[in-house]
Length: 169
Image (cartoon, rainbow, N blue to C red; front, side, top):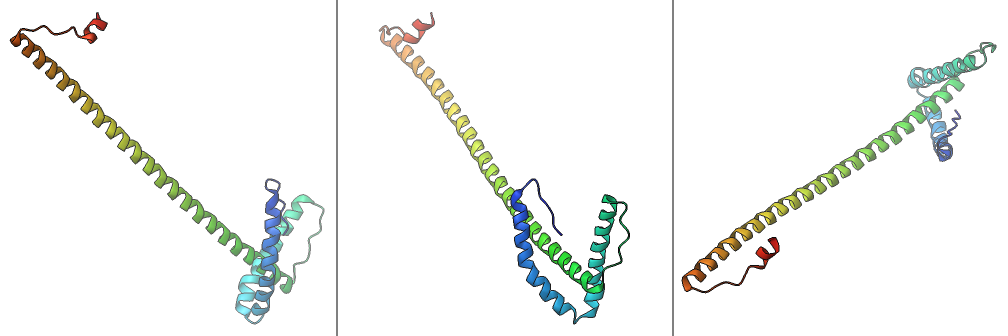
C-alpha cells in the first residue's frame, strides 16, 4: 500500500508516520479478531479479498501477460482487511477534522465579513448624518445672513461687501 505523492513531498512522510502509528493497532486488532469469527469472516477477510482483487485488476491492466494469481489465504486477507479498515478510519478521522476546521474558518470569515459590512453601514449612516448637519448649518447661515441684512436696513448702516460674492464675480 505504498502511494507516491508528487505534488506534496511531505505527504509521503506523513503517510509513513500514520502507518507506523496504526501498525501496532492493526496487529492488536488481528489478535483480537481471531477470537471473533463473525467479524473476521464477514468484515476483515472480505475487505482483504476486495483489496487483493483490486490490486490484481490494476496489475493486469499494467502487464497483460501476467498469469492469474491464486487467491490470498485467509490470514493474509485478514491482515490486508485490517490495514484497509484502519486506513479508512484514519482517513475518515482526518477528513472529518479537515472539514470541521474548514467549516470553522468559513464561519469566522463570515462573521468578520458581517462586522466589516456593519462598520461600513455605520460609517455611511454617520456620513449621511454629518451631511444633514452641514445642510442645516448652511440653511441657518443663510437665515442669519438674511436677518443681519434686514437689521442693517432698519438701522440704516451699510454692510461691508461679502468676500464670497466678490470671488464669485
